[in-house]
Length: 356
Ligand SMILES: *Cc1c(COP(=O)(O)O)cnc(C)c1O
Image 1 (cartoon, helix red, strand yellow):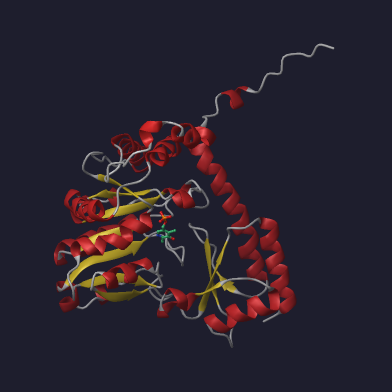
Image 2 (spheres, rainbow, N blue to C red; image 1 turned 90 degrees about the vertical axis):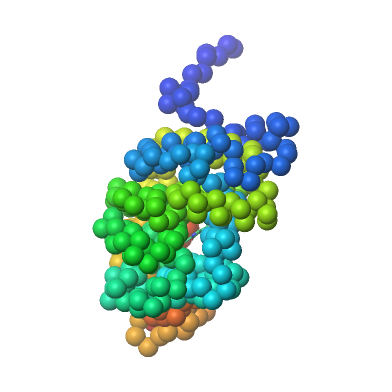
């Protein structure tokens, strides 16, 4: 019996070979050497191209982009470049623990900026005392936010630029979740506002956008001298990101939006399963506009810790107590949509059965 030629659909033929990009590059001996600490120029060009496409921001790949071994690496190291013992660093709280820990490693003092329901979970720049601002060196910001999922607007970013100019504070904006957004509303980059490049840098990660968490690749963009300072620390501590991984990163950054659209669609279905389910149980929660976290107010009679323990013991669900991200997170728990919508629906069912 003779068969007939099997033709795949055109859409399959035109798929980029991204699945095998890294394997192919790993087979090439030229990548098995020490990379340059600042990253391959071709990777930094891919970052600049992505910034132009995604944010309409122009970057000089040679001086305004720095490759990182994951954004956590850069965030943890930047205080070593700019903070002397006793210098103040502004840190959002609740927030990513690396901001205060990196600050502490450099001998800096974290000045917490509480994120509360009253301030819309945005740091209140006007509440910062003048004398504190005068002695501050850096400010960490994070939008879309982990753990609250709140997004900063361009207007807010403009106020940050003004604050930074006035007080000579270097802004370090963590945009790890910029591509995990919902309802077709992409968050802004800090670099989109006038003057941002004169006051700071922005951190990005390929971990969340392209599910490359264990590959350890990220980057920072913006102020040349700030990046040079971070680069100086890095050149003395690490030897750059494995080139085959950078090649895979180039492929990822060059992918068509339909790939990340697909990921967003999955997260959105999960969010739209979990959040209405929790609401139906009477829990106070807003649908997040971005990131994959759901910030839930704990019900009456519970603390962050006791509600987390209750869900673990009575419903077999692991959540994170909000105060684990800093004291102002007390009264909340963080849930994630990093599991299937079927499991999330089951979680809602189990919470219902367990009661609270
Ligand atoms: C996950 C995460 C990062 C770090 O990601 P890398 O894998 O190190 O690139 C940075 N900031 C926040 C807020 C995160 O949640």
